[in-house]
Image (cartoon, rainbow, N blue to C red; front, top):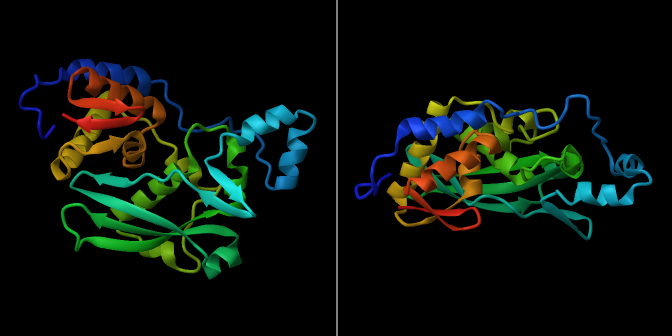
Length: 250
């Protein structure tokens, strides 16, 4: 950590061992390949059938709300942490022509570098409305907003934001979302990635609060890798948990 001079060095083999136990069992597929995915609200109700309670439990996992026919996504992360910089994100829903033409939920996203306000960008970021409405049926623990920001991060890192904003630009759909659920890493890789990102954040905002969702979208970890990784760093005194899923670098 940037401020770890007063703390003993992390026993790397111990952290690596903890991470490897979880990496070995992680599954980035999200759901069984054979699980059907209804494609419309009518089909959702038909699939729920006579079990109304089951239907309500499925749709309760969604991270958006329906307000007078408009879909609002509410759980976006605030940060995009890269190894050498951190962007603050501001996100607003956008009533664009392409959203209407392509049945999308569209957003305007602005990223501003914490250390250099001249390093800023603005882009459009959209998800298929049909996929959003069906997302609860996948029974994933990951809010859809998190996957959408991971999708964005990949384009930030590839310097390909121009591919997102055109009328026929790339969007998150049922066909590509699995690429952003997370993948396997060795214990060594996971440790080094997490250490690097925490150092990056501490370097630009010492003592600033950091949320679980910010780290999730800034990596390609599965939940099963990120959670024990953070627990290992907490146990060694390098980060402190301020509240549920909120941390500060010591």
